[in-house]
Length: 121
DNA sequence: TTTCTCACA
DNA sequence: TGTGAGAA
Image 1 (tube, rainbow, N blue to C red):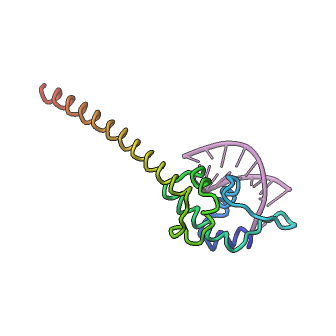
Image 2 (image 1 turned 45 degrees about the horizontal axis):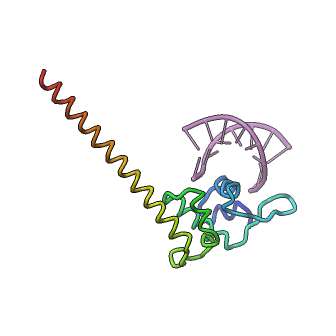
């Protein structure tokens, strides 16, 4: 199928599909006129890509999934690299949450301090 | 309709 | 991580 049909079948813009290809996430054969041609299983792959990217994974993360991304049923696939990616992502999120929590505590303390000063006037 | 590139959020 | 515009 051509890029327009893949876009329609996946609900993903042609622009995004070209972007995924540029990033090495999606490949296509070329027609004589240079138009991209996709096999029907590209639909599952794109839907998986979309879901993973929307869930906060980066292009590099999705890259690490290897052939798993092409799976028609990603959730039921015992994808070893996916486990590593998810675990690393969880660690990163935990670190970010800790940092934000720290910042929030500091800001709350400053706020209370300032309020007390102002109300003491 | 599709291709590409540049610029931008 | 995408998108818009412009030209072929």
